[in-house]
Every structure is written in structure tokens, then in C-alpha cells.
Length: 160
Image 1 (tube, rainbow, N blue to C red):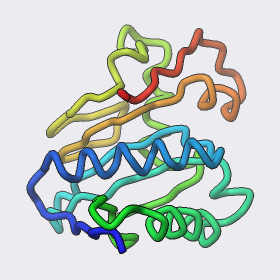
Image 2: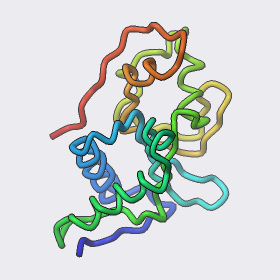
Image 3: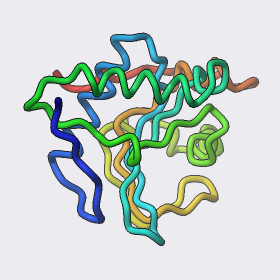
Image 4: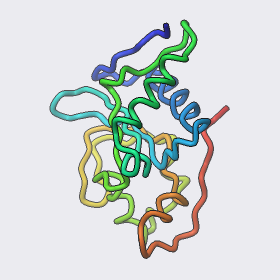
């Protein structure tokens, strides 16, 4: 069985790599990950990997967690995987995901600014977060699911 890591208040390279590996493997299963980011809960000081997908809405969160669990189960013994306890799945109505839409008509709406970026003690739109690391914001998929968005979009891949 793979080595399961549990998140703490410290941001580590191990959690960063484990999250990136999970996202790549989800992409291989057509999991439609529109956004993926680590978010530090300011009250509990625990990091959660948040995955946004329209499949959470259509297939239900239980099925999406099962997909993640299957990926974790198939991991190599020396590969770090993220405990399901430290993962949050959400549909496109996630408050942070929607906050990114609130800046789409501003100078901040540049997808290159929101890939592989750590942001601490900040606001996006009107949503405050203590700390965050963004793997991806898939603006093309984001706009397909939000009526009235017409911004040019690009999806930037994770590094190899």
C-alpha cells in the first residue's frame, strides 16, 4: 500500500508533489478537474486539497471520492498519497472557485497568474483565505460552466 500522508499546518514539498500526482492521475481518468488548490483552514490550521469538478454535481461527491480512493489504492508502495480526510471535493459552486469569476473583468484576470502560485492572507473577489497554493484554474472549463463568460482561455499543464 502507498504511504499515506496527513496534512498539518506546515506546507511541504511532499504534500505539493502528492497533490500534483493525484491531479495527473485524475486527469488520466477524465475526472474533469477544473480547479485544484491547497487551502489552509485558518481556524484549524490544517491544509485541505480542494478539487473542483462538474462530476461532483452530476455523479455525486461519494462517487468522486471513490475515484480518488481507487487511485490511492493503485499507488505504488513508495508513492505518497493524500488521505481522503485531507481532500475536499466540490462542484463549480465552490465559493473560492466562484470568487475567481468575480475578477474576470479586471486586470487580475490572467490565467498565468493563477497557476502554481502560493497566496497567503489574501482576498480573491470578496473571499478571504489564510493561505492557498493553486495548482490550476482551468479557465476554459470554468467558462463552459458559467453562463455569460466569454474570456479567452488557456489551460496550463502541470509540470512533467
